Structure formats: structure tokens, C-alpha cells
Length: 385
Image (cartoon, rainbow, N blue to C red; front, side, top):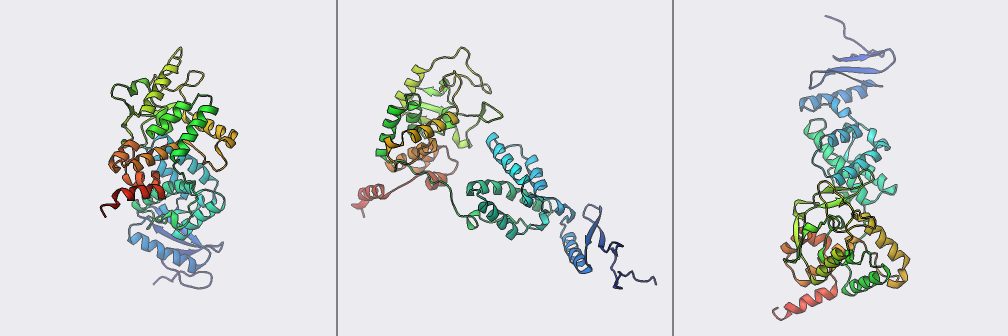
């Protein structure tokens, strides 16, 4: 019988174990793909703990070696397989990956990540000044990436399967709808101090609930003055790398037809009347005849209006009062939705007009109420109680 192999302290070693001259312990095994693998440890006890984990993973079909992939490598692999994301989503996720490259957490092996590690990482991001919305975008990338690793038998469980709100406090800016008095005051303010250049844009956003990129994606062909409606078919976007490009609306439900109120009808008529045809109509991804043009005859984009609204309200803050809320294009969208809800429109019609894929988004995010509107609704039904 051959003599049992021992370590330098005389302890008997198991099959596959060895004690190297440099003092490290090594274990040799074959993984699920029939590849020879080696693991190392500073003590025999540590080595055997790793062996037990390996044997457990092998028995369950888990690829222990694949679990040595880093978080960054896994996320990159996951993103390389995505082909259906929209341009804006790609940009948001690419920003996440670039941030992760600088974070030590991204170099950890995925099999080492426990739920407490994932939560602690998010807490550290928050403590470093990241907003919940930014951390939520990070989670939107790492969570499905780790789910892919589970499906591929790289790891046993997904450590990112938890509610972000249980870990990070909500600190997002709460958009509130403008009251009827505030709407009238803001339109008057824009007419008096805005020089008229964006007044009709504001009127149309407030009367249609369009996203600003949908507004500036409108072409002359999207207007039907006979039926008094407009057709939402696209978004016109712009990034640092791509000055102009067309994307479909945010969801499939975003393709919709919006009726024109009298104010919207007149505003669109003014826009068409005041539109100076450029020498050459710009064509963006096959689309031309954009309704809203800047002073150089090029299509407006969201950044134009957002910057203008911000600067105008900051410059003439006294005209609205210090307590007047900050108004953005999205606040106007919130206001439109809330106006319709308070007027009594049914939820499915409201969902359609907003272009939401889910009615819960319409109700939970975009509608706002207060005591006066509740009291009015209550008084209408009180007689039947």
C-alpha cells in the first residue's frame, strides 16, 4: 500500500490536495466543463472549506470557476447580449458601467457577493452622494446580470433580489401639479417675460400632456386640423454623440392620437403661421418637416426648452413669487394628467392619452389631489350616500 501524502506538519492530505514549497495549499479538481482547475489557500482548514463549497456546487451543477468572474465582467457580458434597448437606455446603462469601472466593488468575484454585500454597496453609493434614481439605474443593470449568472449556473442565488426602497431612502424631487391659478399665472408670466418664442410650446404641452421630445418630434404631417387632433408617432432626441436622432415613443402605448383643445388648436395654428421654412428641410432618420424650429432653422430639442424655462424662472423669480414651484416640461405633463383626472375622465382614457403601458403609473405617479378636489368630488356624490 502506498504511503499517504502529508503536509509539512505531518497531516494526511486528501486526493487532489498538496502542500507547496511556498507554504500554500492547493486543491486540483475538474469543473463541470471537464476543465482542470486549481484553488489555493494559506491553511489546510481554509482549503477544505473551499473544497466543500466546490463539491456542493459540482453536485448541483454550479460552475464554481465561472463564479470567479468579476462583477464588471458579468455586467459587460450581460450588456453585450442586449440588442433591443433604446438609445436613451443604452446611454443610461453605459454611464452606469463607466461609473462601475472606478468602483472597487466591480472587481469582486460574483460568487463572493452576498445580499448584505450588495446592500452595503448601495448604501455606500448613497453615502457618497448618489441619488436614489441613479442607484436604481445601477440596480436595473446588475440585478438582471446576476439573474443571468444564476440561469447559467455560475452562482446559486441572486444577491440583488431586494427592494431598493428597503435600503435607500427616497430622495427624488417630487413633482407637483400646478393649480388652476398657478397655470394661469405661469402662462401670463411666459407671455410677458418669455418674448413669445416658447409661449405656444408651453400652451401645447399643458394642453396635451406630451413629453417634450414627443412635442419636438411632431411634423406638419402629424397635425389634423379637420379632426382637431395630432398624432404622436416619434420622439426627436439629441445627445453629445448624436446631434439628432429619432426614437419611437417610450412604450408601444406612446403611439397615440391626442385631441386638440381650443387653446392647443390656436397655438398650433400660430406655430405653423410663424414657422419660417428653412432653405433646406432637415431630414432626421427619414423624417422631415418638423414643426418647431430654432432661429437657425433646425429642429428644436428638449434641451432648448428645458434650459429656457429654467433660466427664465430664475431671472424673473420675483414675478412669480418665491413660493412658486419650479416648472419643467414634465411638471406640465403632470398638470395635464391631474387636470383630466379631476375633471372626471375615466382611467383607461387617461392612460391612453398619457401613453402609459400601465394604469398604475397614471394613477400613482402622474395624478395629484388635494383637499379641495376631494371635497368637490365628495359633494357631488354626498346626496346618494
